[in-house]
Image 1 (tube, helix red, strand yellow):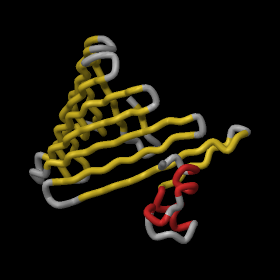
Image 2 (cartoon, helix red, strand yellow):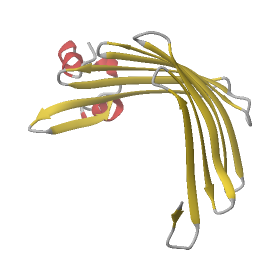
Image 3 (cartoon, helix red, strand yellow):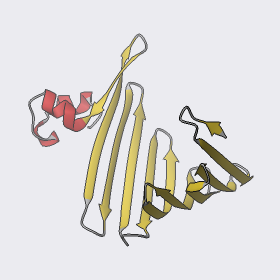
Length: 168
């Protein structure tokens, strides 16, 4: 339990049953006497590369209620991580399919994520992280890097530019 400067309190509780290959976790957060977040999640390790996770989360904050069911498979193959998932928002009835890929290299990391919802929403994002040496790292989205170079899309990049960004 944490007592805040304004006199309010918040409490976080979690219980985990199982091991690194199979477990179930339940958690809850209260503010004062009000339950604001509660959920249950689980993990099953399928094999050396893949895990299946899923869960349910309920939250209530400022009169807004949210219930979400999530499932995803994570596949780690050396320096490449793939995540495929699906979310279901109970209040809106929207199903969202997600995928993400992260490629690690000696010089940094390139990540791509995309999602499509049954309500027509779509997102896509590419993030880049590169080592600059001496303990410094540069990070940014592909969109911001393209704007800096005065380009409208990744299609305008030369083969050399794509290789230097890890996009080849």
